[in-house]
Length: 384
Picture 1 (cartoon, one colour):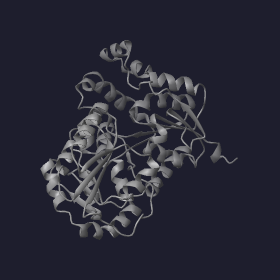
Picture 2 (cartoon, helix red, strand yellow):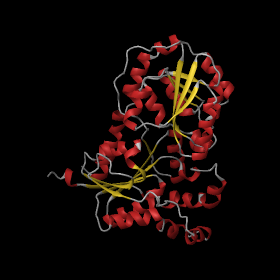
Picture 3 (cartoon, one colour):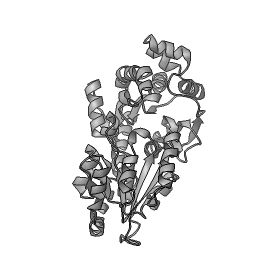
Picture 4 (cartoon, one colour):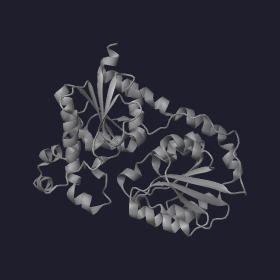
């Protein structure tokens, strides 16, 4: 076995790793450098050599009374070490030694740093959003956890060897906070060959699609209200029921609107081929918090690989992509009236004319291109 393949890597994430696109993208590269152990929720990902499954009920935030007392007393270090998720990972890892530890998001950072220190390993931390303002729309989170999460970011994050995140706005904020370099890895999808050479229309209907999570702060009703009763348009929403109550409300609303349907989410491997049957992807998440203001989500790159022109609200980094490649429309604001007005300006000829531009965007905005950065980072961390 080569020295390269003898490298031992831990990929740690408080998520369903087998269904987490960004974590799977890391895994695809990491396995080229050695033996990869994953630790997180759910079944073993296909590309992992070993998986340490953590009980999905093991919370990553401190929720017991003693921990909340510690947070109230600003004993953040002891509170962070004693979360159920961290205890479960600590037990599962036991005395294993690694050459590289990869932590996904702030909630795995403390235990990842502990394991990296024990192993004398390099630490790569990938932040999926700006954690100190992660759930700022929830007053309970602001009251209980905001200062705790900010402490982790101020005291543990700067000790990582490499920090990456998802968008330029979030990258810049982390750099300002920590006075250290932070790298950008976008949530791109694997390159997919064009499914069809021609955009076809049935009954002169433009078929819109939105994929994502049912989260109230995303105000998906703006999009629904814009399409409601709009002649010549049909909207399908593939929603993950993250907020069960909000999801039920959206399903109930859609049932009363003939040209809108809520559809159960599909697997990651199925998504791009399925949405390639639509005419336009839509994303109109209003900037109700810092992370939404600076978002650059998976769905944008999934739309591109499906060769779908994009209708987006004026979200800075999404708008830059749409304008740079000429692959869609940016609404003047996030209101339903603004979205509706933009939709009414779409012509079938526009959709056809964007085909070649979408092919260019799909090649340039591919996961394979973004993996060049991943390879460079891992090579430097493992000194290979």
